[in-house]
Length: 66
Image (cartoon, rainbow, N blue to C red; front, side, top):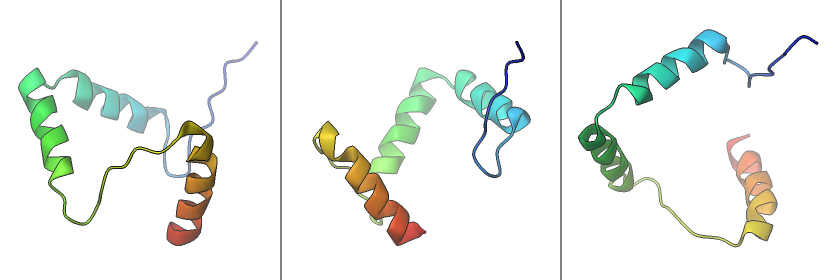
């Protein structure tokens, strides 16, 4: 049986491989710095929502960014 992978638009196996290579080569300090810098972005926020609401939130976001 052939193993097929469906990638999102704009993605392919090479892009995934390069992304994995990037993150797997980072030191723990670099990983922490990247996480912390993401939290400092004043244009975005991080929220906790109940899991059962995730599909609805994703749908709402897709309409906004659509």
